[in-house]
Length: 112
Image (cartoon, rainbow, N blue to C red; front, side, top):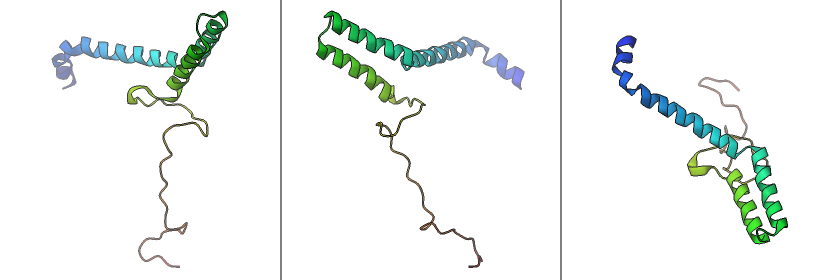
């Protein structure tokens, strides 16, 4: 059956290969976008441009805010896995389910 399936889906092999390639490229682009070295370089470039007078301090502040927003907000609903420090904005922690005020629950016929 596996050989028959492989033969029937052989014309779709280029599509599967292209899909895998797009996933690899997207993953690499995301890792570059969130790479601390690249983020720091962008912030330093903004500071240097402001010091040289190429951009105004307001433009520098806007650029810095855009870089920081990119780090704190996932793009297009794609959840970025990573650690978040306490106090940073993000999704709230899921609610915990209690078990009746901390008392252990017992099944049927359980004693005291």
